[in-house]
Length: 470
Image (tube, rainbow, N blue to C red; front, top):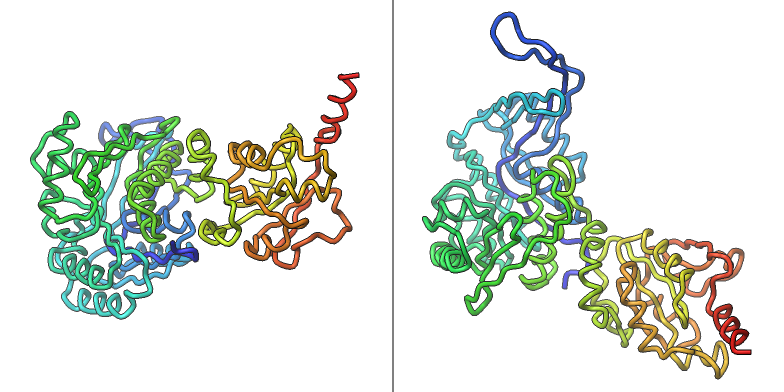
Protein backbone atom coordinates (compact mmCIF):
# COMPACT_ATOMS: atom_id res chain seq x y z
CA UNK A 1 0.00 0.00 0.00
CA UNK A 2 1.08 3.58 -0.68
CA UNK A 3 1.23 5.17 2.78
CA UNK A 4 2.38 8.64 1.77
CA UNK A 5 0.40 11.08 -0.34
CA UNK A 6 -0.73 9.56 -3.61
CA UNK A 7 0.52 11.45 -6.67
CA UNK A 8 -2.07 11.43 -9.42
CA UNK A 9 -1.84 12.87 -12.93
CA UNK A 10 -4.96 14.26 -14.64
CA UNK A 11 -4.95 14.98 -18.39
CA UNK A 12 -7.91 16.24 -20.35
CA UNK A 13 -10.31 19.03 -21.21
CA UNK A 14 -9.98 21.98 -18.86
CA UNK A 15 -13.19 23.92 -18.26
CA UNK A 16 -14.33 26.96 -16.34
CA UNK A 17 -17.88 27.06 -15.00
CA UNK A 18 -19.30 30.57 -14.50
CA UNK A 19 -22.52 31.34 -12.68
CA UNK A 20 -24.47 34.57 -12.98
CA UNK A 21 -26.99 34.86 -10.13
CA UNK A 22 -29.90 37.29 -10.12
CA UNK A 23 -33.64 37.92 -10.04
CA UNK A 24 -36.11 37.77 -12.93
CA UNK A 25 -39.40 39.49 -12.20
CA UNK A 26 -40.33 40.96 -15.58
CA UNK A 27 -40.14 40.26 -19.31
CA UNK A 28 -38.14 42.23 -21.83
CA UNK A 29 -40.17 44.69 -23.94
CA UNK A 30 -37.93 43.73 -26.87
CA UNK A 31 -38.97 40.05 -26.93
CA UNK A 32 -40.81 37.64 -24.58
CA UNK A 33 -37.79 36.64 -22.54
CA UNK A 34 -37.05 37.22 -18.84
CA UNK A 35 -34.81 40.10 -17.78
CA UNK A 36 -32.29 38.86 -15.19
CA UNK A 37 -31.01 41.53 -12.85
CA UNK A 38 -27.51 40.40 -11.84
CA UNK A 39 -26.74 40.27 -8.12
CA UNK A 40 -23.67 38.03 -7.98
CA UNK A 41 -21.21 36.15 -10.19
CA UNK A 42 -19.12 33.11 -9.27
CA UNK A 43 -16.78 30.60 -10.89
CA UNK A 44 -15.98 26.93 -10.29
CA UNK A 45 -13.86 24.21 -11.85
CA UNK A 46 -15.34 22.02 -14.58
CA UNK A 47 -14.32 19.10 -16.77
CA UNK A 48 -10.92 17.62 -15.94
CA UNK A 49 -10.39 20.45 -13.46
CA UNK A 50 -13.27 19.15 -11.32
CA UNK A 51 -11.66 15.70 -11.27
CA UNK A 52 -8.45 17.31 -9.99
CA UNK A 53 -10.42 19.29 -7.42
CA UNK A 54 -12.02 16.08 -6.13
CA UNK A 55 -8.60 14.49 -5.77
CA UNK A 56 -7.32 17.46 -3.77
CA UNK A 57 -10.31 17.11 -1.43
CA UNK A 58 -9.30 13.45 -0.97
CA UNK A 59 -5.79 14.59 -0.01
CA UNK A 60 -3.99 13.45 -3.15
CA UNK A 61 -1.08 15.34 -4.69
CA UNK A 62 -2.34 16.34 -8.13
CA UNK A 63 -0.84 17.50 -11.42
CA UNK A 64 -3.02 18.54 -14.35
CA UNK A 65 -2.27 18.98 -18.05
CA UNK A 66 -4.55 20.59 -20.59
CA UNK A 67 -5.20 23.55 -22.86
CA UNK A 68 -6.51 27.07 -22.27
CA UNK A 69 -6.95 30.05 -24.59
CA UNK A 70 -5.24 33.44 -24.64
CA UNK A 71 -8.18 35.03 -22.86
CA UNK A 72 -9.38 36.26 -19.48
CA UNK A 73 -11.11 32.95 -18.77
CA UNK A 74 -7.84 31.07 -19.35
CA UNK A 75 -6.02 33.24 -16.83
CA UNK A 76 -8.86 32.82 -14.31
CA UNK A 77 -8.84 29.06 -14.74
CA UNK A 78 -5.06 28.76 -14.40
CA UNK A 79 -4.98 30.88 -11.25
CA UNK A 80 -7.93 29.01 -9.74
CA UNK A 81 -6.18 25.66 -10.23
CA UNK A 82 -2.96 26.98 -8.69
CA UNK A 83 -4.89 28.36 -5.70
CA UNK A 84 -6.17 24.82 -5.03
CA UNK A 85 -2.59 23.56 -4.72
CA UNK A 86 -2.70 21.71 -8.04
CA UNK A 87 0.53 21.50 -10.09
CA UNK A 88 -0.84 23.18 -13.21
CA UNK A 89 0.41 22.79 -16.78
CA UNK A 90 -1.83 24.85 -19.06
CA UNK A 91 -0.75 25.00 -22.70
CA UNK A 92 -2.07 28.03 -24.57
CA UNK A 93 -3.91 27.44 -27.82
CA UNK A 94 -5.44 29.68 -30.47
CA UNK A 95 -8.82 28.32 -29.34
CA UNK A 96 -10.91 29.95 -26.57
CA UNK A 97 -10.89 28.54 -23.03
CA UNK A 98 -13.87 26.22 -22.67
CA UNK A 99 -16.30 28.21 -20.51
CA UNK A 100 -19.85 27.37 -19.58
CA UNK A 101 -21.86 30.32 -18.25
CA UNK A 102 -25.11 29.59 -16.48
CA UNK A 103 -27.68 32.33 -15.92
CA UNK A 104 -29.48 31.59 -12.66
CA UNK A 105 -32.62 33.31 -11.37
CA UNK A 106 -34.48 32.30 -8.19
CA UNK A 107 -32.30 29.15 -8.03
CA UNK A 108 -33.45 28.10 -11.50
CA UNK A 109 -31.19 27.90 -14.54
CA UNK A 110 -32.62 30.23 -17.16
CA UNK A 111 -29.93 29.83 -19.82
CA UNK A 112 -26.50 28.34 -20.46
CA UNK A 113 -24.02 30.01 -22.77
CA UNK A 114 -21.01 27.96 -23.96
CA UNK A 115 -17.77 29.43 -25.21
CA UNK A 116 -15.70 26.62 -26.70
CA UNK A 117 -14.10 25.01 -29.71
CA UNK A 118 -13.32 21.36 -30.37
CA UNK A 119 -11.18 22.02 -33.43
CA UNK A 120 -7.85 20.12 -33.56
CA UNK A 121 -5.01 21.45 -31.43
CA UNK A 122 -1.75 22.64 -32.88
CA UNK A 123 0.61 19.65 -33.27
CA UNK A 124 3.30 21.54 -31.33
CA UNK A 125 1.09 21.51 -28.21
CA UNK A 126 0.71 17.73 -28.35
CA UNK A 127 4.46 17.28 -28.72
CA UNK A 128 5.36 19.62 -25.85
CA UNK A 129 2.71 18.18 -23.56
CA UNK A 130 3.68 14.56 -24.19
CA UNK A 131 7.41 15.23 -23.82
CA UNK A 132 6.86 16.87 -20.44
CA UNK A 133 4.54 14.12 -19.22
CA UNK A 134 6.95 11.42 -20.43
CA UNK A 135 9.85 13.01 -18.55
CA UNK A 136 7.87 13.02 -15.29
CA UNK A 137 5.65 9.94 -15.57
CA UNK A 138 7.51 7.81 -13.02
CA UNK A 139 6.62 10.12 -10.14
CA UNK A 140 2.90 9.29 -10.41
CA UNK A 141 0.93 6.44 -8.85
CA UNK A 142 -2.04 6.72 -11.22
CA UNK A 143 -3.18 8.59 -14.36
CA UNK A 144 -6.68 9.84 -15.23
CA UNK A 145 -7.77 10.83 -18.73
CA UNK A 146 -10.82 13.10 -18.47
CA UNK A 147 -12.37 13.33 -21.93
CA UNK A 148 -15.13 15.79 -22.82
CA UNK A 149 -14.56 15.64 -26.59
CA UNK A 150 -13.09 19.16 -26.71
CA UNK A 151 -10.13 18.02 -28.81
CA UNK A 152 -7.34 17.42 -26.28
CA UNK A 153 -7.65 13.64 -26.05
CA UNK A 154 -7.67 12.64 -29.70
CA UNK A 155 -7.07 9.06 -30.83
CA UNK A 156 -3.28 9.29 -31.32
CA UNK A 157 -2.53 11.30 -28.16
CA UNK A 158 -4.78 9.10 -25.99
CA UNK A 159 -3.13 5.90 -27.21
CA UNK A 160 0.35 7.34 -26.63
CA UNK A 161 -0.60 8.22 -23.04
CA UNK A 162 -2.10 4.79 -22.37
CA UNK A 163 1.01 3.06 -23.73
CA UNK A 164 3.24 5.33 -21.63
CA UNK A 165 1.34 4.46 -18.45
CA UNK A 166 1.30 0.73 -19.24
CA UNK A 167 5.03 0.72 -20.01
CA UNK A 168 5.62 2.14 -16.53
CA UNK A 169 3.08 -0.15 -14.78
CA UNK A 170 0.92 2.79 -13.74
CA UNK A 171 -2.89 2.37 -13.64
CA UNK A 172 -4.61 4.61 -16.20
CA UNK A 173 -8.34 5.38 -15.86
CA UNK A 174 -10.47 7.02 -18.54
CA UNK A 175 -13.74 8.92 -18.29
CA UNK A 176 -14.94 8.23 -21.85
CA UNK A 177 -17.14 10.22 -24.20
CA UNK A 178 -18.62 9.50 -27.63
CA UNK A 179 -19.54 6.09 -28.99
CA UNK A 180 -16.14 4.95 -30.27
CA UNK A 181 -14.20 3.57 -27.32
CA UNK A 182 -11.37 2.11 -29.39
CA UNK A 183 -9.18 5.09 -28.53
CA UNK A 184 -9.23 3.97 -24.86
CA UNK A 185 -7.94 0.49 -25.72
CA UNK A 186 -5.62 -1.11 -23.11
CA UNK A 187 -6.53 1.32 -20.33
CA UNK A 188 -6.99 -0.06 -16.80
CA UNK A 189 -10.65 0.86 -16.63
CA UNK A 190 -13.31 3.18 -18.04
CA UNK A 191 -16.14 4.83 -16.10
CA UNK A 192 -19.08 5.07 -18.53
CA UNK A 193 -22.56 5.50 -17.11
CA UNK A 194 -25.38 3.24 -18.31
CA UNK A 195 -26.44 5.55 -21.16
CA UNK A 196 -22.85 5.97 -22.39
CA UNK A 197 -22.19 2.23 -22.17
CA UNK A 198 -25.31 1.43 -24.18
CA UNK A 199 -24.26 3.87 -26.91
CA UNK A 200 -20.74 2.40 -27.06
CA UNK A 201 -21.75 -1.27 -26.99
CA UNK A 202 -25.09 -0.98 -28.86
CA UNK A 203 -26.58 -3.16 -26.09
CA UNK A 204 -29.70 -2.03 -24.22
CA UNK A 205 -29.06 -2.61 -20.53
CA UNK A 206 -32.30 -3.62 -18.82
CA UNK A 207 -31.31 -6.48 -16.49
CA UNK A 208 -28.28 -8.35 -15.14
CA UNK A 209 -27.95 -10.47 -18.27
CA UNK A 210 -27.72 -7.47 -20.60
CA UNK A 211 -25.45 -5.68 -18.11
CA UNK A 212 -23.09 -8.68 -18.20
CA UNK A 213 -23.19 -8.68 -22.02
CA UNK A 214 -22.35 -4.96 -22.12
CA UNK A 215 -19.46 -5.40 -19.71
CA UNK A 216 -18.09 -8.30 -21.71
CA UNK A 217 -18.29 -6.24 -24.90
CA UNK A 218 -16.53 -3.30 -23.24
CA UNK A 219 -13.78 -5.64 -22.14
CA UNK A 220 -13.43 -7.01 -25.67
CA UNK A 221 -13.46 -3.59 -27.35
CA UNK A 222 -10.96 -1.97 -25.02
CA UNK A 223 -9.05 -4.93 -23.49
CA UNK A 224 -9.77 -3.49 -20.04
CA UNK A 225 -8.35 -4.88 -16.82
CA UNK A 226 -11.49 -3.87 -14.88
CA UNK A 227 -14.66 -3.48 -17.00
CA UNK A 228 -17.25 -1.46 -15.08
CA UNK A 229 -20.37 0.62 -15.66
CA UNK A 230 -21.82 3.19 -13.26
CA UNK A 231 -25.54 2.59 -12.75
CA UNK A 232 -26.72 5.75 -10.97
CA UNK A 233 -28.92 4.76 -8.00
CA UNK A 234 -28.15 1.06 -8.64
CA UNK A 235 -24.46 1.60 -7.86
CA UNK A 236 -21.66 0.12 -9.99
CA UNK A 237 -21.58 -3.08 -12.00
CA UNK A 238 -18.25 -4.74 -12.85
CA UNK A 239 -16.58 -8.00 -13.86
CA UNK A 240 -14.25 -9.90 -11.56
CA UNK A 241 -11.21 -11.86 -12.72
CA UNK A 242 -13.44 -14.81 -13.68
CA UNK A 243 -15.70 -12.57 -15.78
CA UNK A 244 -18.52 -12.98 -13.26
CA UNK A 245 -20.88 -10.04 -12.78
CA UNK A 246 -20.61 -8.13 -9.52
CA UNK A 247 -22.90 -5.28 -8.49
CA UNK A 248 -22.09 -3.00 -5.61
CA UNK A 249 -25.27 -1.07 -4.81
CA UNK A 250 -25.26 2.60 -3.98
CA UNK A 251 -25.23 3.58 -0.32
CA UNK A 252 -26.63 7.08 -0.74
CA UNK A 253 -28.93 8.15 2.07
CA UNK A 254 -30.42 11.19 0.35
CA UNK A 255 -30.01 12.46 -3.21
CA UNK A 256 -30.00 16.22 -3.77
CA UNK A 257 -27.85 16.73 -6.87
CA UNK A 258 -25.93 14.29 -9.09
CA UNK A 259 -23.82 17.07 -10.69
CA UNK A 260 -20.18 16.03 -10.87
CA UNK A 261 -20.74 12.60 -9.31
CA UNK A 262 -18.94 10.95 -12.23
CA UNK A 263 -15.85 13.08 -11.59
CA UNK A 264 -15.94 12.04 -7.93
CA UNK A 265 -16.20 8.34 -8.84
CA UNK A 266 -13.17 8.30 -11.13
CA UNK A 267 -11.15 10.36 -8.63
CA UNK A 268 -12.00 7.94 -5.81
CA UNK A 269 -11.20 4.87 -7.92
CA UNK A 270 -7.86 6.38 -8.93
CA UNK A 271 -6.97 7.22 -5.34
CA UNK A 272 -7.54 3.71 -4.03
CA UNK A 273 -5.89 1.94 -6.98
CA UNK A 274 -2.93 4.31 -6.57
CA UNK A 275 -2.70 3.22 -2.93
CA UNK A 276 -2.61 -0.45 -3.92
CA UNK A 277 -6.13 -1.49 -2.93
CA UNK A 278 -8.01 -4.10 -4.96
CA UNK A 279 -10.80 -3.13 -7.34
CA UNK A 280 -13.56 -4.33 -5.00
CA UNK A 281 -12.52 -1.97 -2.22
CA UNK A 282 -11.85 0.85 -4.71
CA UNK A 283 -15.43 0.53 -5.97
CA UNK A 284 -16.79 0.41 -2.44
CA UNK A 285 -14.87 3.59 -1.64
CA UNK A 286 -16.00 5.29 -4.88
CA UNK A 287 -19.64 4.46 -4.12
CA UNK A 288 -19.29 6.09 -0.71
CA UNK A 289 -17.63 9.16 -2.23
CA UNK A 290 -20.46 9.50 -4.76
CA UNK A 291 -23.01 9.13 -1.98
CA UNK A 292 -21.41 12.04 -0.14
CA UNK A 293 -21.42 14.42 -3.13
CA UNK A 294 -24.95 13.66 -4.31
CA UNK A 295 -26.10 14.55 -0.82
CA UNK A 296 -24.86 18.10 -1.48
CA UNK A 297 -26.02 20.85 -3.81
CA UNK A 298 -23.99 21.58 -6.96
CA UNK A 299 -20.72 20.07 -8.21
CA UNK A 300 -19.36 19.18 -4.79
CA UNK A 301 -16.37 17.24 -3.50
CA UNK A 302 -15.96 14.60 -0.80
CA UNK A 303 -13.16 14.61 1.76
CA UNK A 304 -11.47 11.48 3.12
CA UNK A 305 -13.08 12.22 6.49
CA UNK A 306 -16.58 12.41 4.98
CA UNK A 307 -16.10 9.21 2.99
CA UNK A 308 -14.72 7.26 5.94
CA UNK A 309 -17.58 8.50 8.12
CA UNK A 310 -20.04 7.38 5.46
CA UNK A 311 -18.44 3.94 5.30
CA UNK A 312 -18.17 3.54 9.07
CA UNK A 313 -21.71 2.32 9.87
CA UNK A 314 -21.48 -0.25 7.08
CA UNK A 315 -18.05 -1.39 8.25
CA UNK A 316 -19.12 -1.78 11.87
CA UNK A 317 -21.89 -4.24 11.10
CA UNK A 318 -19.58 -6.58 9.22
CA UNK A 319 -15.97 -6.01 10.11
CA UNK A 320 -15.49 -5.17 13.79
CA UNK A 321 -13.06 -8.07 14.13
CA UNK A 322 -10.97 -6.78 11.20
CA UNK A 323 -10.40 -3.49 13.05
CA UNK A 324 -8.54 -5.24 15.89
CA UNK A 325 -4.74 -5.41 15.58
CA UNK A 326 -2.88 -7.81 17.88
CA UNK A 327 0.66 -7.22 16.61
CA UNK A 328 1.87 -3.62 16.85
CA UNK A 329 4.57 -4.36 14.28
CA UNK A 330 1.80 -4.45 11.62
CA UNK A 331 0.32 -1.07 12.56
CA UNK A 332 2.18 0.67 9.72
CA UNK A 333 0.09 -1.34 7.23
CA UNK A 334 -3.08 0.60 8.11
CA UNK A 335 -1.69 4.12 8.41
CA UNK A 336 -2.51 5.99 5.22
CA UNK A 337 -4.75 8.78 6.48
CA UNK A 338 -4.41 12.52 6.34
CA UNK A 339 -4.59 12.99 10.09
CA UNK A 340 -4.13 10.22 12.66
CA UNK A 341 -5.51 10.52 16.19
CA UNK A 342 -4.38 8.21 19.00
CA UNK A 343 -5.67 7.59 22.49
CA UNK A 344 -5.43 4.69 24.92
CA UNK A 345 -6.96 3.13 27.99
CA UNK A 346 -8.30 -0.01 29.64
CA UNK A 347 -11.95 0.54 28.61
CA UNK A 348 -12.96 -2.26 30.97
CA UNK A 349 -16.72 -1.64 31.14
CA UNK A 350 -17.62 0.60 28.21
CA UNK A 351 -19.96 3.42 29.25
CA UNK A 352 -21.38 6.74 28.08
CA UNK A 353 -18.31 8.65 29.22
CA UNK A 354 -16.04 6.44 27.10
CA UNK A 355 -18.23 6.74 24.00
CA UNK A 356 -18.48 10.53 24.30
CA UNK A 357 -14.71 10.82 24.80
CA UNK A 358 -13.96 8.66 21.73
CA UNK A 359 -16.42 10.55 19.55
CA UNK A 360 -14.73 13.84 20.46
CA UNK A 361 -11.31 12.32 19.74
CA UNK A 362 -12.47 11.01 16.35
CA UNK A 363 -13.49 14.50 15.26
CA UNK A 364 -9.88 15.65 15.57
CA UNK A 365 -8.67 13.70 12.54
CA UNK A 366 -9.35 11.14 9.83
CA UNK A 367 -8.49 7.91 11.67
CA UNK A 368 -8.78 7.16 15.40
CA UNK A 369 -6.48 4.42 16.69
CA UNK A 370 -7.20 3.21 20.23
CA UNK A 371 -4.44 1.54 22.22
CA UNK A 372 -5.98 -1.04 24.58
CA UNK A 373 -4.20 -2.38 27.65
CA UNK A 374 -4.00 -6.19 27.59
CA UNK A 375 -5.40 -8.23 30.48
CA UNK A 376 -1.93 -8.62 32.01
CA UNK A 377 -1.27 -4.90 31.69
CA UNK A 378 -4.60 -4.03 33.38
CA UNK A 379 -3.86 -6.41 36.28
CA UNK A 380 -0.48 -4.77 36.88
CA UNK A 381 -2.07 -1.31 36.84
CA UNK A 382 -5.35 -1.93 38.69
CA UNK A 383 -4.93 -5.14 40.68
CA UNK A 384 -5.84 -8.82 40.35
CA UNK A 385 -9.61 -8.15 40.36
CA UNK A 386 -9.40 -6.33 37.05
CA UNK A 387 -10.19 -6.39 34.22
CA UNK A 388 -13.84 -7.36 34.49
CA UNK A 389 -13.98 -8.10 30.73
CA UNK A 390 -11.29 -9.91 28.73
CA UNK A 391 -9.12 -8.06 26.25
CA UNK A 392 -10.89 -9.82 23.37
CA UNK A 393 -14.32 -8.66 24.58
CA UNK A 394 -13.11 -5.13 25.27
CA UNK A 395 -11.42 -4.88 21.87
CA UNK A 396 -14.47 -6.13 19.96
CA UNK A 397 -16.85 -3.71 21.66
CA UNK A 398 -14.50 -0.78 21.00
CA UNK A 399 -14.08 -1.83 17.37
CA UNK A 400 -17.86 -1.84 16.98
CA UNK A 401 -18.01 1.93 17.58
CA UNK A 402 -18.33 4.19 14.54
CA UNK A 403 -15.77 6.56 15.99
CA UNK A 404 -13.03 3.91 16.30
CA UNK A 405 -10.98 3.03 13.21
CA UNK A 406 -8.57 0.50 14.77
CA UNK A 407 -7.92 -1.08 18.17
CA UNK A 408 -4.38 -2.16 19.03
CA UNK A 409 -3.77 -4.33 22.10
CA UNK A 410 -0.48 -3.70 23.92
CA UNK A 411 1.11 -5.58 26.85
CA UNK A 412 3.33 -2.86 28.30
CA UNK A 413 2.27 -0.68 31.24
CA UNK A 414 2.36 2.40 28.99
CA UNK A 415 1.61 2.86 25.27
CA UNK A 416 4.95 4.60 24.58
CA UNK A 417 6.27 1.88 22.28
CA UNK A 418 3.00 1.84 20.34
CA UNK A 419 2.92 5.63 20.02
CA UNK A 420 6.51 5.59 18.73
CA UNK A 421 5.37 3.25 15.94
CA UNK A 422 2.35 5.35 14.99
CA UNK A 423 3.73 8.91 15.44
CA UNK A 424 0.17 10.31 15.53
CA UNK A 425 -0.81 13.78 14.43
CA UNK A 426 -2.87 14.18 17.60
CA UNK A 427 -2.34 12.40 20.93
CA UNK A 428 -5.52 12.58 23.03
CA UNK A 429 -5.76 12.26 26.79
CA UNK A 430 -8.29 13.17 29.44
CA UNK A 431 -8.36 16.67 30.88
CA UNK A 432 -7.07 15.29 34.21
CA UNK A 433 -3.62 15.13 32.55
CA UNK A 434 -3.39 18.93 32.46
CA UNK A 435 0.02 19.96 33.81
CA UNK A 436 1.24 16.34 33.90
CA UNK A 437 3.78 14.56 31.75
CA UNK A 438 2.07 12.59 28.98
CA UNK A 439 3.71 9.34 27.92
CA UNK A 440 4.63 9.31 24.22
CA UNK A 441 4.09 13.04 23.71
CA UNK A 442 7.52 13.38 22.06
CA UNK A 443 6.32 11.18 19.17
CA UNK A 444 3.12 13.17 18.50
CA UNK A 445 2.72 16.38 16.52
CA UNK A 446 0.19 17.78 18.99
CA UNK A 447 -1.54 17.00 22.29
CA UNK A 448 -5.27 17.46 22.92
CA UNK A 449 -6.94 17.14 26.32
CA UNK A 450 -10.63 16.24 26.39
CA UNK A 451 -12.94 16.71 29.36
CA UNK A 452 -14.53 13.63 30.87
CA UNK A 453 -18.24 13.53 31.68
CA UNK A 454 -18.75 13.84 35.43
CA UNK A 455 -19.55 10.69 37.43
CA UNK A 456 -19.09 8.40 34.44
CA UNK A 457 -16.38 5.81 35.09
CA UNK A 458 -15.81 2.07 35.26
CA UNK A 459 -14.86 2.35 38.95
CA UNK A 460 -18.19 4.01 39.77
CA UNK A 461 -20.09 1.27 37.90
CA UNK A 462 -18.24 -1.43 39.86
CA UNK A 463 -18.95 0.37 43.16
CA UNK A 464 -22.63 0.60 42.29
CA UNK A 465 -22.82 -3.11 41.46
CA UNK A 466 -21.15 -3.99 44.79
CA UNK A 467 -23.47 -1.62 46.69
CA UNK A 468 -26.61 -3.03 45.01
CA UNK A 469 -25.58 -6.56 45.99
CA UNK A 470 -25.54 -5.64 49.70
